[in-house]
Length: 218
Image (cartoon, rainbow, N blue to C red; front, side, top):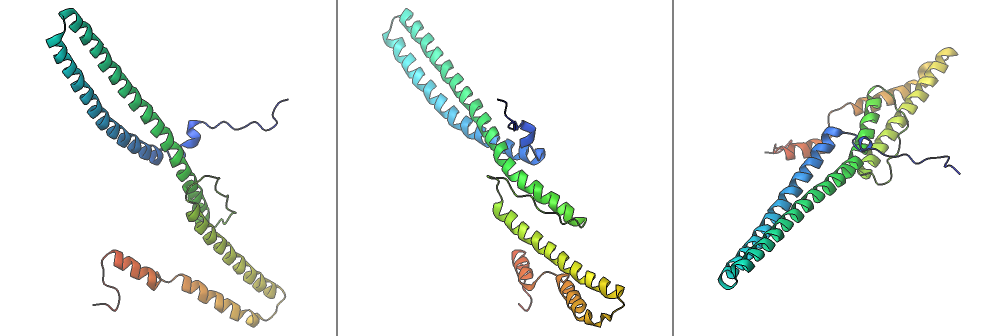
């Protein structure tokens, strides 16, 4: 029996939502991992070569030339094997870090992309419903704050629409608009307050971060 809902197969490009940022972060992670691995691997390989040299010197003093040559061949094979293991481990670790980096940055890029698209919608006065983040996405707390802000904007627009509908209805029936004036004035006052400069608390924080004296200070 065939599956009516085949599972969507993700491709690499599905994980690269923001190629520039994701690949940059992943590259930094890979380079840091490679640098640490190279430093530790070089130290380990050097110490192994020193041990092989000590064995070779002792062998020259105690063994026959034929046995010495055989021992040197074995030591050379061991050194080569260690080098291959070191290189293979470095490559495997780099691939694992790269894969992990792409997956983790994907969980960051996804929420950022969604919020950016919603902000673009808000910019052109489209307050569409938000799509939720996926399970496992990062920035859940940030998105929750963004969601509350978006809900507040929608509520304000709905309030404005109710007020405007009342005005339109009053005009259509030729009624007296004085009853609606207090609501209009209150709404205008709220809108005016929202257009003021940053709050005093925000200004204090910014001035403190910039090392500027606060108002009323010395």
